[in-house]
Structures are given as C-alpha cells and as structure tokens.
Image 1: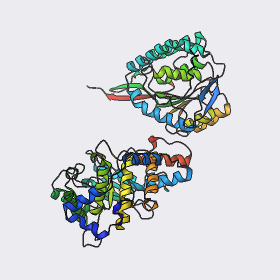
Image 2: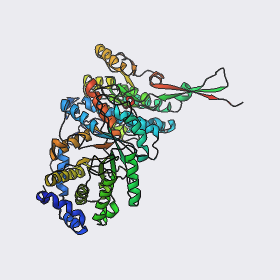
Image 3: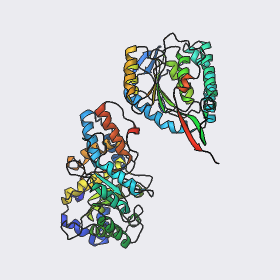
Length: 336
Length: 274
C-alpha cells in the first residue's frame, strides 16, 4: 500500500490541473524496492499448477489473449484469418473458449470487424473485442491532432478498444502534464466516460507505457499512476516493438499500482502485459502473480489480458495435451 | 600430502546440446554409476529441442553435414581409451568409428544415388530429390552398446533428420559418453538428443507425440510393447522401422536401408524451353 491510499478521490482528480501538483505527487510515490520486486516475481514463478487447475488456467488464459498482429506486412486476408482464429481458436474442439480480443492496426479494423461482428459468431452470442492501436503506434512521435484523428478513425471503423502509446519523450523529460493532457484528449476521442453519448461509440482505452524505454521501476510506477489518473481503463506494458517487453517484475509493479489506485479511488483499472509471453508456463506465472497481488477480482478477461500472438498456439497445444493425453505438434495449428 | 579425492562423474541426459539432469530429479544405478532416469517431460523437452534443430541441420549443405560428421569420427577416435574403460571392446570402438565415417561419406552421395532426373513423356525436366523426414525417435539396440548406437544414429542424421534417442537401459554409459563426443564436435545442439532410463516411460510418449515424424523401434525386445508403439505411432502416420532381432549381426555391411527409410522424396516437374 502506498501512502496515498488514504487520499481523497477528489484530491487526485485535481492533480492534472497543474504541472507542479502532478510532479509533486508522482515523485512523492514511494520508490520500488528493485531487488524485492524481482525476488517476489521470481518466487511466484515457481508455483506448480497441475491437472484441473492447469486446465482452468489454460482456458482462462485463452480468454485473456489479445490476439495481435502488428506488422507492416499485414494484409486484409491475414487479419480475416486471425479474426476467424480468435472466434474459434481450436476448430476441432467446440468447448474451447474464444480469445479476449483481436488487436490490429487502425487500417485493418474494418476487415477484423467483418469477421467478428459478422454471422460467424461463437455460440452463445459473445465475440472477442476488437482492439486497435492508435496514436502513431509504436513511437507515439506525432502531433496531437494526428493522434486524435488516428484514434477517431479507429473508433469509427469499429474498434471498441484503443491501445494508445504514451509520449515517452515528454515523460522522460519530466513534462508529465503534457503526457496527462494527451491521455485525457485521447480518452475524449474514444468517446469519454459517457457511454450514452449520441452517435459516438465508446471505446475502452488501454495506455501503453512502453516500460522497456522507461528505464526504472520507479518510472513504471509513476507512469502507471499518471495513466490511471488521466482516465486510462487499462495499463499495458509494451508495444512489442522494443527489445525489452513485458517482464514479471514490471507487471508486478503495475499490478501493485492498480491495487493501490483502487484502494485510493474505488476505480478498478486493468493490466495487460504484452510482448515476449510465448509459453503456457509463462502465462500461468502471470496468472499466479495476478491472484497473489491483486486477487481474483482481476482474474477476468475484463481486467487482465495478454498481448500475444504465438502464445495462443502453445496454450492450444497444452490444452490438447490435457484432453487427449498426447503431446500435440505445431503442424496441427495455424501459423498466425 | 593427503590422498587425492576422486572426482566422481554423474551421467546426465543430452538435450539441445546441454547435459541436464532429469526434470524429475531421479537417477538409477547401472554399470556401477548413477545415471539420470528420464521422465516423459524430458522426452517432451527433447522433441522440442530436436524440432528446433531441424531447420538449421536439414538446411545445411550436404558437404557441411559431412564435414561435421567426420569431425565427430575424429573425436570418437580420440576417446577410444574412455570407451574401452567402460567395457566396450577395442574392435567395437574401431568398428563404430569406421561405421560413422562410412555414413559421413554418404552425406553428399545419397542424393545422387537415391534421387535424380526421371525420364518422362512430355516437355518437362522431372527431378526427384530426397529430403529428410524431420524428427526421428530412435530406440537404440541393447547390445552392442556403442556400435549398435552409432549404427542407428548416424544413418538418421546424415541426411538431415534430427533424433531423440532412447539409450539402452542396461548399458547407457556408452551413450552418454557418445553425447560428450557429439557435444565437442561441431554438431549443432538438438540434432542428437539422448535419454537414459526405462524404455516403458519415455518411448510411448515419443511414439504418441504428434510432432515426431518417424520412429525406429530397433531396440524394442518386448513384442507387446512394439505392437503398442506401432499403434500409437499410427495416430499421425509416423514412419515406423520395425524392431531388429536380438541376434542381428551389427558388424555386417548395413546397406542404405537405414538412411533411405527416413527420407521423403520430392519430385519437381519443370517445363522445358522450346
């Protein structure tokens, strides 16, 4: 728990009004014990999850996957295929749940929407969400108007989740107000908090901190609070485009931040580690950490997601192993 | 000066170019040594390592593979005394080294003998080329410990396959020592993976594994187990090599059969110009 846990909600919302107040608050957050965080994360990674618990964890992890393709070489055909896979990850097994969302570039949103919102829905009527990256992903180095236009275009094309990148240049230079205002503006472009606003869809906002570029755990904690104060619905570790992506300790620091933020304000914020999570074993380590750090409230696709592409196939192979008793091979699952 | 304390050796598995202990932490006493007792998870890890090595090994030029296999033979020659200390007769070590060299020589010759241009009634070049099957699970013969092992590993890998070998449960030391030979040659990690322990634990896992392309049952002596393994292997249409009789003469000329059984033939039709 941080010292701020007792602060009144109203005081926190006032912070964005002045650069000084914001800076004082963010720099007043207690520092992260680096060795402690890394040891805690490593320790939680040693839990053994087997048999029925494993089966449950695998199905939960599948429901939490944001099936992602963010390549320059993405084509409409590839995105349609990906969306079809998101609906029915294992066509051979109807009991396999659909994934949490599909995550694509804004220009690819209509093609994914075609499949996800079309007739090919999963049984029970639910379908994966449709997330789009926006705001000059992955660098975030573009004028604000361009970022806003990018966001609006994605929302209008049918995205109900927006993954924005923060302006790391401004954050690292200490211009917190600028970063804050930008998140507020993007949130507004997503449709704001008001769900019933006429004619404008409301999209969930995920804020990518790009922790690999922030340098320290203290910065990760500050960026997490900044993003939550500005109204982000989710905080996400990485774009997947820099060498250091999601790690267990970074996710631990972010989970502590969302826990403390809920204690202080009553508002729950989701967490999405992205990049570098490739195996079922990794995914289960994250789930254990979520359960131990923030509790079962976050063990739900609405509050925890994995940004991944190759993870899904490994989850499916492990799932097949549990149901058939025979180790599965990658030849029997789609490549993308 | 006090007497020197002997450095005692632990015989471990060989997976992905490394020597890990069994994931299960178990070992068993055989040939007066502690040897790792592989579990089905070790078998799974070995298949993952073998699959990862396929691209590089099958993609290497035949000449390059041959050179690496010659290098293995050089290392094998250098460890002659060590194998003899494990109870392998001198002439068997020599025969094993010669067998290895013989197979190494086939690396760039087999495609010429076994593939080539086919005469067809049309304006096409029609070419057949042998390609490796992929990941091969191998049950090594119980005896002879070294010559038998070399006679099943070398023909599988010379053409570009990668192997997961279940070593002889009663004489595994020669297999682990061969792993040391392979690790000190230029053989990429994962091309040969060696599991020691009970066949009944590791081999059924390998036979049923969907990411294994062929299984060589040479060392299976129990006919019931062999039948069961063949049934498991049928699930994904693995190529199966049947068990070899216990009294098989391993010093005889092996022929090309062991190499060609683990190949797929790719035939290409190419239009001829006018």
